[in-house]
Image (cartoon, rainbow, N blue to C red; front, top):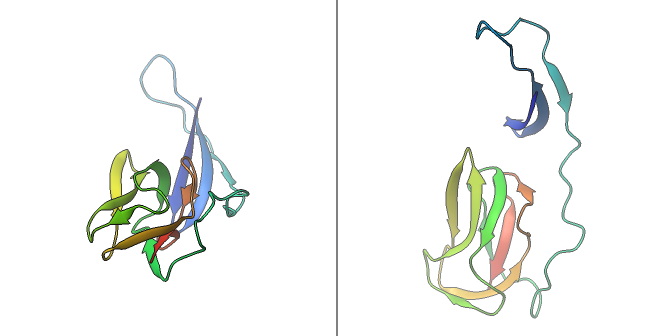
Length: 123
């Protein structure tokens, strides 16, 4: 059996898939689908220096936080990667929408995020 987490139209599902043996054709059975609990905000967010900024850096797609490229206090230019998310086995950089200084990083590596979620803020 293999476990997968699938997001469909913003709903997250945990799916268990059983592999068939022998003929290469798996027997047809009702899939085991269990709706996952809603994804909550991280319990402990990384500390922000001086509070949240006015410029939001938002996720363009749902996925999982793969890497945090910038740190609080770092100056970034428009187009610089701030956070990298993983979606469908692809690494997708989330870039600064304009020049600024990172005021807060609002996610941690491994967090599941939805499209449009605020990942960081800039001043």
